[in-house]
Image 1 (cartoon, rainbow, N blue to C red):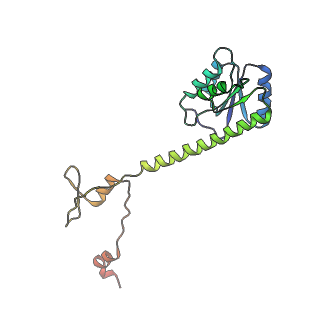
Image 2: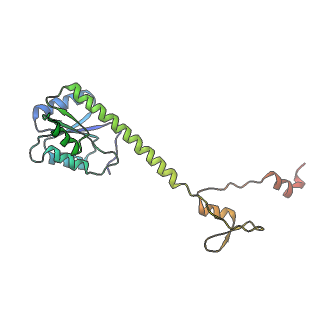
Length: 204
């Protein structure tokens, strides 16, 4: 899996050259890393080889439709999903609903203003940051759980030798049993009572 970067990378899928230039200049001026794909097929090829966080998709593309591209991108398994923005000249509610049903997270209607597009991208950037933090927290939790083993139930222990009988009916020292059934580590020392008992002659 391609490494997740800390600054968002944007792919604009747009076949109109003038719109390509407008979007590219706008995003570069805002210090975003932006790439251009002129078709759905070239977009899929790019995302297979490079990492992108946010994708702007023109609804009307040559060949594969923008809605179909949305579905294919949404089906790609990723740690942090793409944030997909549909760019459309459709204003009918049912068409916008189709965009969301295809996997889009947001949409802008053409012709869009620079402020509107940047506002949508800022929302996407915040969502991506939240998802990254969630992924990090889940990884931390899984790492912590992997280190935890619990002792439970009735543990048979010898009243004299203080050894514990394991599941195979062997008797182990307390240290060995706890080591085998948890991730605890032992640091041996001597308690004050044993110090007095075993080393009384060395104590004042």
